[in-house]
Image 1 (cartoon, rainbow, N blue to C red):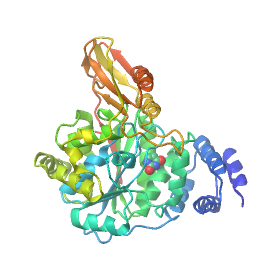
Image 2 (cartoon, protein in one colour):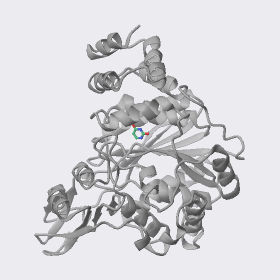
Image 3 (tube, helix red, strand yellow):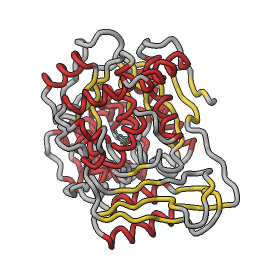
Image 4 (cartoon, helix red, strand yellow):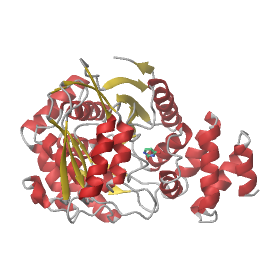
Amino acid sequence: MNIVEIIKKKRDKGELSDEEIRFFIKSVTEGGVPDYQTSALLMAVYLNGMTDGEISVLTDAMAGSGDKIDLSYIDGIKVDKHSSGGVGDKTTLVVAPMVAACGLPVAKMSGRGLGFSGGTIDKLEAIPGFRTSLTEEEFVTFIKRDGIALMGQTKNVAPADKKLYALRDVTGTVESIPLIAASIMSKKLACGSDSIVLDVKCGSGAFMKTFESAVLLAEKMERIGRANGRNVYALITDMDQPLGCAVGNALEVKEAIETLKGRGSEDFTELCYIISSFMLVAGEKAGDLNEAREMLMKSVDNGTALEKFRKFTKNQGGNPEIIENYSLLPQAPAVIDLKSPVRAAVSAIDGEVIGSAALTVKAGRLTKEDRIDHSTGFELFAKKGDNVEEGQTIAKIYAPDEQSAREAKERVFSAYSFDAQAKKEKILLGYIDREGLHID
Ligand code: URA
């Protein structure tokens, strides 16, 4: 068996055998395939897809490419969450401390930015001193003592995904149902949780642009989870514009903290409550979604959720003073306003255009070697359905210099559409569990 034959087979729309998929993943894990051949196969999969059988073998091979995490030291049901990725998605920064404050331990491994979307680990690294690599001992200690720890994917957990993820990020091969399903589920299966809440994003700021494709991805991931004995809730949520106000690492940290203080934007706050409620129900900490929401609201009102955030920031070496003093977060050298040229309603904000504009101010990576500028990005004050006045500041641009700030401003403006009237969309479009698709 050789890699070129496997690439050609997929290029010609063939179905790969179990042996071929396992051989490829083993070779990638061992460093035996050059990046150009791996990228070629990723592109062939992107273009020609995979059968359900191929996806489940790929997931299994990737999950088995490294160590399995044993979470048996945590009492009760272990619940994990994962997002399929989108622009301005900082939910983990809020959801993790909220559910931990309600008594559900969170032992989470998160990823870096992918394509035009951001990643939790890059966001956490905007906090001065924050360490996203922990020893296993530290991870276990923090979870046992404080019920929360967040770290990057270690070398040993699904290492095949780590390599494929980094290559997909820079080869235009992210938006593929088989590759996303296998990437997410291989990591979830390698981490020993019993239940998994998936946030499958849908719309212009997500990899799945339509409801139908998001449902397809959600169904595949739920099925893989169920076949492996996991209880999966795959929520399909609106991402037809960036989530919340902030896009960019330090700016998103600030928005997450504001949300934990009860001052978050409407769409983002609502999504955090929804995901956290499903997690509390899955973990049997709440009898139903209403009870869960009450517990979560209390954790924000009485400050325990914010205290969890403080605790885990401090545990992991981050400066907790950022919570009271945002000027301790990285500050962008150039900041300019984008003002509305019209009195109108915002009818759309193209999420992918905003996400791509964020890459031009270095809030994400264009090549594997790129270093992120944690200070840059955008704040979007006017969202879909909002009425704006002529001359009103609708966004702020944070950039490394004046020139890129001006260029980014043009791009951000091009993402906006205006109309006489526009309405807000609801955030939860439906969810899939073992009983099938539920639409609200
Ligand atoms: N998150 C992942 O871990 N992998 C993907 O492919 C997309 C989002």
